[in-house]
Image (cartoon, rainbow, N blue to C red; front, side, top):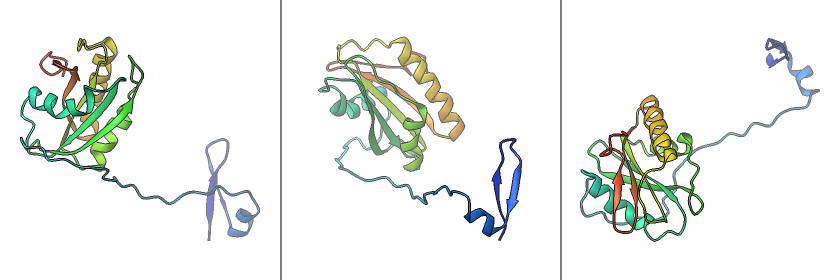
Amino acid sequence: MEKYEFLKNGQREWDNEESQISRSAKRVNIVSIKLIKEDSFLYPERRVTSPTDAYNLLKRFLIEADREYFVVVCLDTKRQPTAINICHIGSLNASIVHPREVLKVGILSNSASIIVGHNHPSNDPTPSREDVEITKRLVEAGKIVGIEVVDHIIACSDRYISLKQEGII
């Protein structure tokens, strides 16, 4: 059986089985990917039809937190939430979020769209420059993989800002 390996110049070298065994081998894991349901709750509104609906859904995860939490809500084609994931827990005033991690749960959940949200423990929902930048990156990444980013909600205990209403999405 012939095998190949890449040489330093990028070309392939075909070897037979015997010479391959004499070289040190790299173990490659065979994996499967799955979501694990940790908990659930009943959502009486059934659909997320407005930023207020999104805020009401997200605030149970965000308003009591002492650090920034970044949450992803996965939606089906009828805008019904199917899964919620706390994607990242940051520090008192920052959260480093990467589109790969945000969209991973949407892909694994077969989501048509997502809503993202995070809290500002300072209780001022004014979006930072970083909030605007990550939102734009998420929208672009979502377009590439076919998952619409419907909104980004910045939640505080008694108010919120929708980046869709602000014209950023």
